[in-house]
Amino acid sequence: MSSTFGKILKLTTFGESHGAAIGGIVDGYPAGIAVDMERIQQEMSRRRPGSTRLGTARNEMDEVRILSGVYNGISEGTPIAFMIENTSQISSHYSDIEHKFRPGHADYTFQAKYGIRDPRGGGRSSGRETASRVFGGALAKQMLEREGIEIGAGVIEAGGIKASGYEWNPPFPPPLYAPECQELPAMIKAIEDAKADSDSVGGIIECRIKGVPAGLGDPVFDKLDALLAHAVLSIGAVKGIEFGSGFDAARKRGSENNDGMRMEGGKPTFITNNAGGILGGISNGNDIVFRAAVKPTPSIARDQLTVTDSFEDTVINVHGRHDPSIVPRAVVVVEAMAALTIADALLGWRCYER
Image (tube, rainbow, N blue to C red; front, side, top):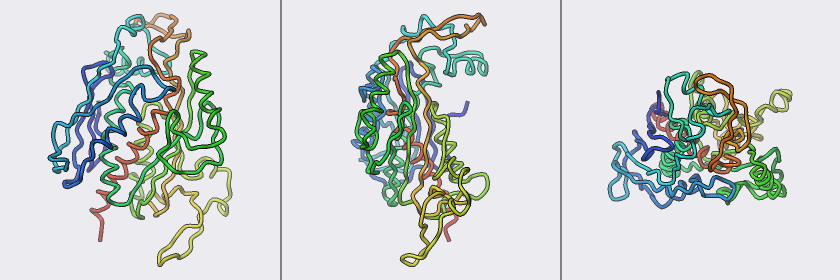
């Protein structure tokens, strides 16, 4: 089982949803960077269970304990080990469904691959694992800020309701972490209605990365958009991703979709950004823009058809503390994976600097 992401800047995570703790190691992080733990904890609070009234009732403080790699608030260039204790798990919620495969979850596939699984909250395949990603991403953000690179994301669709006419000025506030728009109350209501109906909804998160220089990424297998897609699709709830004009590009002519260029301030600039900041797998200096599709929370308190681990037909009803929509808490996770990817690509790019 691979639990490591990145080539130069690497994040390795460990732990299960209902174990004693989760955590990891960030390796390859440069020395001499001020590590602001207060800001990191703010990032953790955006993702933590209980952070929004639209989410789960599980209440974890997600306080990070750094075990190594930081001295007097400055990174040492050595592996940064960290740990986050689990304090609010209730494993008894899973006793009635221990031998049933939950629809929409990794229960069956995990069992098929490894022959064993932790039924308590999904174990290693739980969304709880993303807390470690947020910590790694928060470190990456602080590194990128020194390079003038900023990353922000927000919910632009929830429950089938799309935001329109919004201004992009992240970070966006709870409970939805969406930009202000006329559809915002309806988007929130769609989640609340699903919760009242013992159901769930999905949505779309947009991410914009500003200040990325031209030249990051490779033209063949390690295209920057391919690396970002790998990173974002590794988030369990994400089922799709598009860059720039995305799928709309398939409906346009080349004359509509190509981004014209002019000279400005002594360098080439782009009139539009249908490419989403990446051409031929390499950043072009424009804002990198992508959108991620997040599926509805699979754990719902409704009768669903499934089978047992002894392969008998049965019915399952998943009770417990679950998000009626994963989307709001996934915003900071998308930012984190984007930050780790760009930081890793930036370190790799420096190997090619002339």
